[in-house]
Image (cartoon, rainbow, N blue to C red):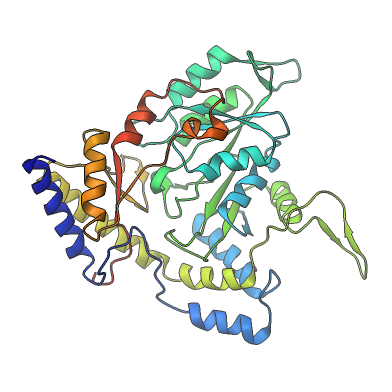
Length: 389
């Protein structure tokens, strides 16, 4: 590693340690508990309502509805299960195809396979890191047609292209309006993977609500956590009712009988998880404000030290779940990852591209030049709530 890089890296690591003086080893994104988490958990235990029956599940769903302005919110055990059900609600069936991006966490693609559908990978765009609507449009015009039944079909595979899953990477909103316009032209449903995007907006619209249906995640490393949990968002009453039914093992309530009218899933969030989530949401404004201040400090530092820091674009509001820099190439990325982690500062690269994983190696894909370049250069920096703010 050259002297110039070492000096640059040393200054950044020192800056990060100064941001988080409370940590001996600075984590990437630690959970923070600022309010009523213990009190609400104690209530669950005292009342014995610890499973998915209890007041906190409904209250947490209502809190998410109010915050996002969604008409309906259905709590699930994790974000992957939420996406699985969202895809089913969008009509995805066995042997269908679902368009998504190559640069995403594996859960996005796994949820597609849970439906026995086939993922098709579209390139990313540099401005906002999400699916590139230009590449999406080009792919569909070259590879798809509308059948006599009104559905979109892949010319080469003959499969129905039923849905498109854009992902709001690291909490940064993707260009959903443009993606939605293209998909509407081809009669393709849009399912937004907003797992990382609670508190992120395209214009005045919360991420997850521009498409037909969307999802959030409340994993332990998210901005708001329930330990493990997810949420389905929709403005469609029928979709919401079906999603709530199917995530509760499709049980039809009868006086004594245990009767289930279709294949269902045991995906409902527990009262324990929801209790934590409700307490977390009571401090959501404080957390979002804290994280935006942290992002601004990073942006100012990077500007002064010739580092390329990702900032939200005009017309979009990011929650800055993970703060991101772009290094020169994979070699410099790996040097910095080694340097920072060996000095007690946790940094991480982006994910391995989906078609580079063994189970998705044979999936159809567009050219992935931008996604490959981004994956080689992205580093995520520590982004936890700062208690010294």
